[in-house]
Image (tube, rainbow, N blue to C red; front, side, top):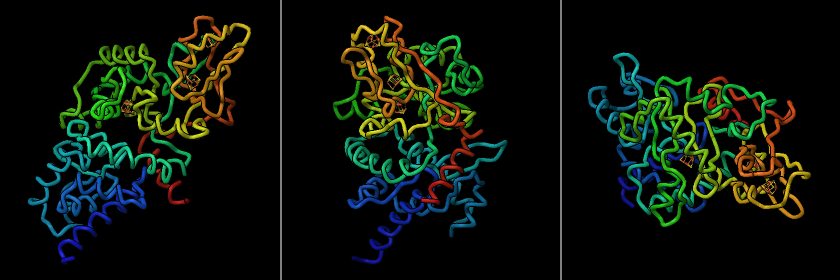
Length: 359
Ligand code: SF4
Ligand code: SF4
Ligand code: SF4
């Protein structure tokens, strides 16, 4: 192997380790599938730049100090990489800042417009391993599950960050992006008929999505209409796991990379941040099975009456409106079992990084 090839191999190993050092991780596998994904997404020159970026926004001048490249030469390269969805970009006043992007949520989602079958196959092979080696080893998740409003009775009071409508009406900038999970599944002949406009992105992330052509700006009222369409389709609400969510995803158990991999695990409820669970009133249940059909987590079995497996129930509330007999309700977990999301996503990511450093 000549020196140039050795160096290009090295840089992708370095990039893998760099992405793995970010809060959500990007662990190595025995098959090396993660390297194939990186080689497909990054050129060698882009990989060399990507490893110099940190998980905090910085101006070009600061980043250039870590590279053998002046700011004038580096600036257009960073801009192009951010437009390709390899790194994150945000504007602060007159200054454009850049930071590293995690693989998920991040680089993968930023490629919703340029997927191909080979990449989809590789990422679908890799993500269960990423979840198993990284996400399942820590307590703090990037997303949490909140209950659909229709599942809550008047006595249940929820926090503002658990109410999708309130999260949306607090936003000044909202972009809707097509669901990458259903997009990629449809491209390989699978997928489902759930709506596609189901990723709502807020704040500075929404500017990045809009400027990169990954989504379109919507008003609060249109975002609320999209939310209703997602609820009508029985989708699970997954906002980012903080008291100030930066997005809400509306997800199905067949395509969503989080839910479909969670579903394969014996105890999904232990792997998700959620403060609720479903309960059956057996006196009202006629064992029709409608709730079991709706549940994305296969948490309900029906024999004489519906039974909720609390190890599998993620408290999404999707089953409740499916019941015509008022036999299902959503209950809040005991205080000691509840999780309080960090104040901001920056703190969530810091908490994840800390927990991963303890593994
Ligand atoms: S996380 Fe949910 S809404 Fe977001 S892309 Fe995946 S399935 Fe779609
Ligand atoms: S939908 Fe209602 S009545 Fe039917 S099985 Fe479920 S809980 Fe029972
Ligand atoms: S039983 Fe299923 S649909 Fe109902 S809240 Fe639990 S996970 Fe959601």
